Length: 103
Image 1 (cartoon, rainbow, N blue to C red):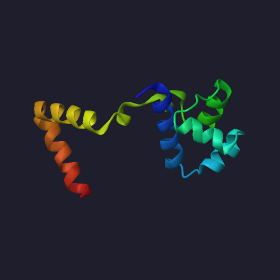
Image 2: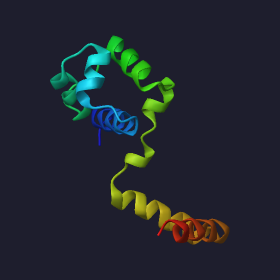
Image 3: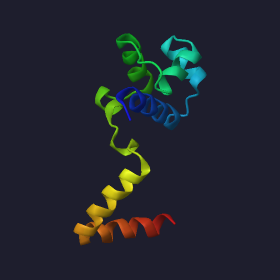
């Protein structure tokens, strides 16, 4: 996945976690809803000015916007987790406890 798509997915993820609709977020930023939609779908990069407005609207530090590791494809995440869990018994037990507490 390229940076444009990752950035769009991350913006969408953060927007939704703050219970902001695309319409409201676009209004705060001062752009059209369709423009925000295109950014979130990875069709366009936001301008530097709009990037600052997005960061302000989401009330985050700039580096938080570029945390993409968890957006890797499912299979890649799963393989990475399995490899790590196989090599670390303590981590496996901790993850299992967490898993049992949420199911």
